[in-house]
Amino acid sequence: MQALHSRWRLSPARLLRYGWVGFLALLLAACHQDMYNQPKVQTYDPSTFFADGRGSRPNVPGTVAVGAAQTDTYLYTGLINGVEGDVMPFEVTRAVLERGQQQYNIWCAVCHGEAGYGLSAVAQRGGIVPASFHQQRLRDAPIGHFFVIITNGVYRGDPEKDGYQSMYSYASRISAEDRWAIAAYIRALQLSQNATLEDVPPEQRANLGQ
Image (cartoon, rainbow, N blue to C red; front, side):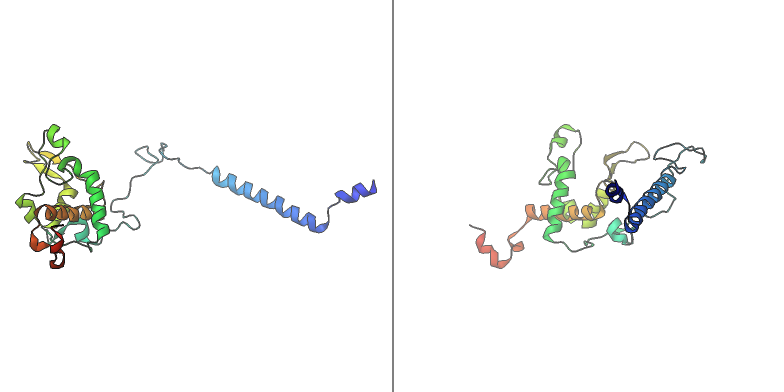
């Protein structure tokens, strides 16, 4: 009996260790209940505190999210002093063109066709005539023109009267960087269909007949 009693008797060190565990458990439980059960409005819950009855609040006008400041005007507008620019806002690399091709095939090819001639299923069945990028007007257009069109869309006629939007804005669907990548790829498409011998580096012209 004495041996059994000594087996279950807690030493001071063991008592201190178990005591801290119990104290920590009580502390965490109390903290969880205070924070978990505090008065708050869940997502999409109504609220009588605000005049419109909504718990979710709209963004304060002029609020800019962290990392979303558009400080590079040309990157986000394609305009220089109100005129469409003819330079890329960043270096065009192979990776940029491949990204542009990927995004073009996702968003643009369905109407303009993979080769950019405006030949597509939408053109045949949709009752619209998508522009061919190989017409002289667009071959002569500055590269910023394509960025602006992707950003703002295209209206036919007067939108205040009987005009209609034949191409919607993709600004909310495609990032500014990807819109530029698509513009660069359109330039590559134009060059691929209208290249001349002078466009080929002299050291590679001998390979054209192979």
